[in-house]
Image 1 (cartoon, one colour):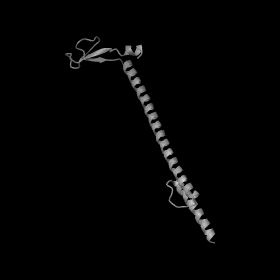
Image 2 (cartoon, one colour):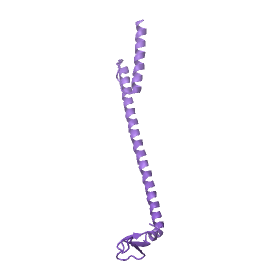
Image 3 (spheres, one colour):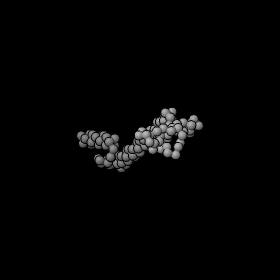
Image 4 (spheres, one colour):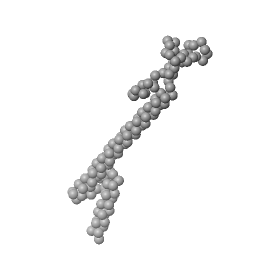
Length: 131
């Protein structure tokens, strides 16, 4: 902390609750019976400013942490979708290479569309061969 802040942290007075007065009494010296230190408005303002800055820094770090986590989750999901699509393509290619065809060999939406189009082409070719 800065020297100026250390100076501000010094109490400006003390509140003595054990005084004979109903409302207590102020003292400008730290007497043995003084209970509560009182601080200047400058000190309170400096402390509040420091706390607000810390809150802002924490909020920024929490946002960055959340953003990084979401980015990691998205990357995992993309890799998973890519792997599934790759498996669908391998299944279709393996069937075509072995000159076989069976429906329902894919899992992804794009794989099912590919499968549907190949089935349609296969059926059209069979119809043309029958004629």
